[in-house]
Length: 309
Image 1 (cartoon, rainbow, N blue to C red):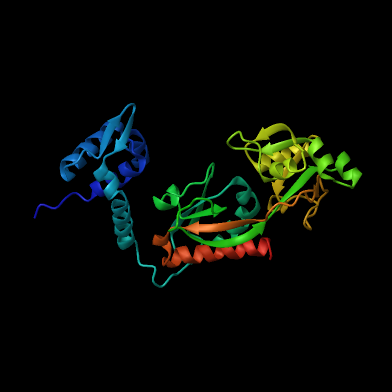
Image 2: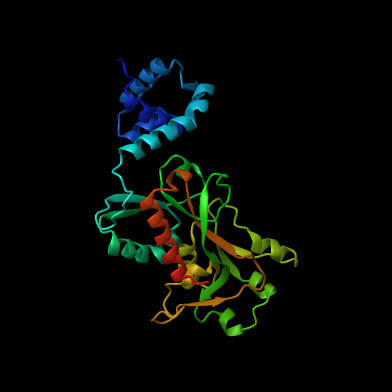
């Protein structure tokens, strides 16, 4: 019987996910010429061009779009069959690498505790943290990660999730800042100060600005930085005001029962913002995996112990 080369299925899955010969080659560790030859074999096998030129880019053909999800599911099913059975999960001998997509703040607050909790019962399990510059369901759908942490957003109806904890925004200035000395923090005083804001897309405005606008007030934005840790660092070393989630302060010296001298003054915002629900998300293909289920429960326990209620 002339059986097809099933290795082509893996290459097909990557090509359909990346939509590019060059990026597919990088992901598979192949040369661009080797990837091009693989695409030629796939075209001959399935009888469709799969990827066609559109200007300077490549796009999927209608047939490629049609089989994209089926191909992805087939590859994951095959890998699941060939993986050693974990029906009777033995954490002491489990050898597995899990990839979590989170922001830098989550790693700073929960990373060390989570790594220690894993190592205590599963010494051969590795945690790999991937940066999260934007919200996207792609990484879960394509199996590039095991878990994602963040605000739900537009992740798609199939994504599974559980709430880890609730967070809220607070204002932060350096210890000894005039705002701390004042004591009465009104919306007008808050808006008039210089602000450092977190913005990954150069917008610089958010719900706080909308609430201030209702009072005919506008923040004076002096600087924009790409993340909350950077905003805290700038606020600590200047007279600028930072706006950060409260959980980003859990490990700060002198705050939340931590030892050391407080370097920051934290205050409630003079406008009322909604709380934020931080969730743990995964793809349904991992729902019944015992090792994956164990890790999900561990992440949940670590977060809820660190952020009770």
